[in-house]
Image (cartoon, rainbow, N blue to C red):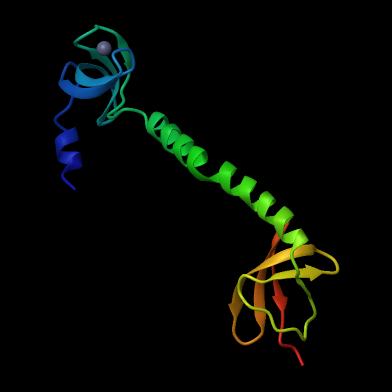
Length: 144
Ligand SMILES: [Zn+2]
């Protein structure tokens, strides 16, 4: 990296690009104090405000926006629909679970301990992944 080379040229009163906490933009700043080879405090050439050096805009804002987007898009909706699906499935016929049983993906089963569950996947030769009301478990099937 040529980062050190670039940094070594910076000293107090050098002009550098930094993120201004007041202007909320990356702007030209003047270095006020140094911390080794890195600028520590800088003064904004635009608003003349002095603050700690930040190379870029803090990541928090975009991360929060991203998080909000995914939460809005999926989790609440899928949880709601799973509850609805469970309710609907309770009225439909479903198999009693047993270790010797043979179950396919998408089938509904009734487990003596965990209750009603939907088979999510079959893993050869004898395991099924079943989603119950509040958990997903791996169960044995085709057991003889
Ligand atoms: Zn500023």
